Image 1 (cartoon, rainbow, N blue to C red):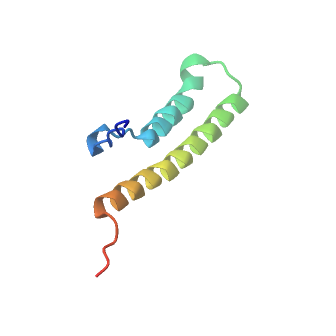
Image 2: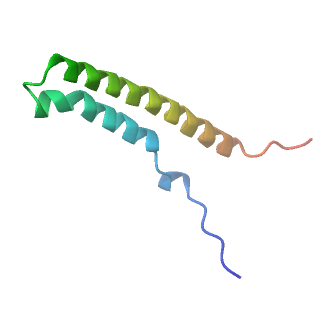
Length: 79
């Protein structure tokens, strides 16, 4: 018999949504920091890409919070 993998505790769960927000922050700041003489369109594209990452992070955060809430509530009990 092979042992089943341990179930992750709530503290050890990774939060993927945080990395979306970190990435969005980097995308927003990168043209100003690394390309100070960049054309206007480069800045517009970075703002658009950062906004896409922010929205994706919001959806991921909603998924994580819903999963955490459902796990905390447990399976519905039949009365």
